[in-house]
Length: 308
Image 1 (cartoon, rainbow, N blue to C red):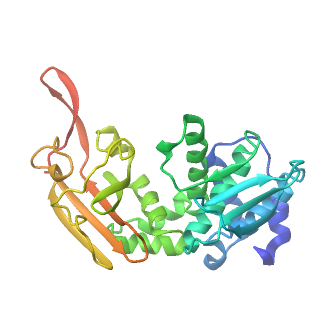
Image 2 (image 1 turned 120 degrees about the vertical axis):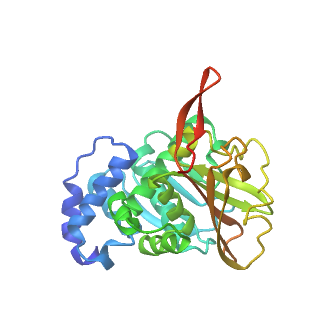
Image 3 (image 1 turned 135 degrees about the vertical axis):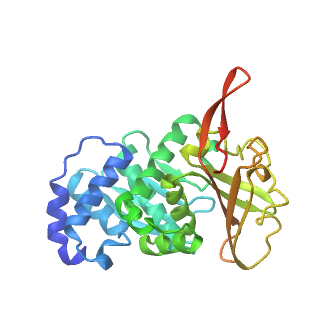
């Protein structure tokens, strides 16, 4: 970007400023980056700091982002705040965070707040708490900022090219994480968005779920975990149970009833786990075939499609 800064600035200055959805805003920036940065090494990972400074200066000269820096932010990942006159904004990230991928995602998240929400509140203090802990308004704007960050850092068309025709594994997830300069968790969350069947990503510690994210197919069939409402144990038969290895990549096939007792007896589930000493939790991917509507005793209900 630096070698073509004049082109970048003119491209950004030519952008209109109407309000867009998080995905549309990120896709518009991605389209500009695709035009400006031709080589793979320039295009990815996204230089969020340079992009945020240049974009805000050229599109919004009356209140640009003028500073991005690291500070000690106990309990928080990042912050977006203006000066007293609201003529300048700054992004601060928690510099105690060791993962460059999480820092990059935090910067993109705060940049999303700037583009999407800065006229709605005075300051943004963002933690890594589950979204269910926030009230409905805050939950929505945090979800918007996450969607913007994910789309900007991992454009869907490029992400699909990386995984197309490949068997899902944490090695594939790590390939994507390395390409986009994000964490393994962020790359795995992106993958379940486009998973061809039902998919759920879990994080666990001490044999209890910390959080869980189901894709649309899994959620619509009732396969999700309400981790903020109750403590949920990892099933004893799961390979994620009592995982104490410092670095483990494991996989097993089992009956889906191991995790979801209401599934048909013949419904399979595939578990993939990654437990790393770098993180304080175990990631688990649960993969199941599609579900379908079936008529059962006078009512409609989701049931798993039997494996054929």
